[in-house]
Image (cartoon, rainbow, N blue to C red):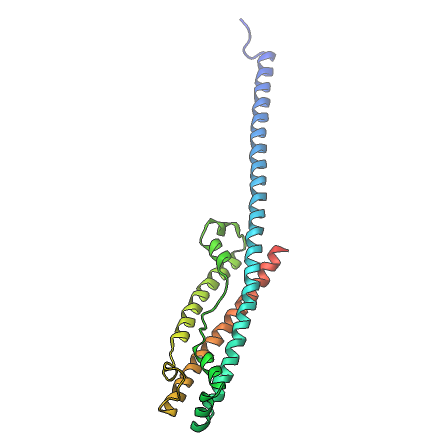
Length: 214
């Protein structure tokens, strides 16, 4: 009877172990290569997301600054009207400058900024591509501030100055008009301060995104 524990049996077991190790190593290498490839794909997609966000934030910063400047100009127009006496304000309303004042009062201040890249990132699985958790937190907070600013802008716009509802005619009460203009100024000033905070946030996040894309 052949010896089951002879040299040939030992060789077979050694070959079996070696072949098993080779198979395991091949599987691990294949899995590792796949993981590396997926990581490369994810990082490429992450750069696309970050680049789109950066472009959007840079454009939004410029748009928000322009809007803030416009509000500042409108505030100056209305402040000068509030400081006038009743006869001077009445004369101004009947002149070409009255149209400037009317436009300033009626102008909508709803913030105009792009949100496509931000919404398509935070609202989909693409958000998982961003590895910087602090950046993710800042983006989520920024989206909340955007929504609040839009609501405030709607409120500022719909605060009607009753004296101008009927074709820019001189109102019966100078005091009533001044009170309404002051109320408008209060909303505008608060809105502009809020806008300033959003501009600072926009600039900060744009800088983070620029660092991530370089």
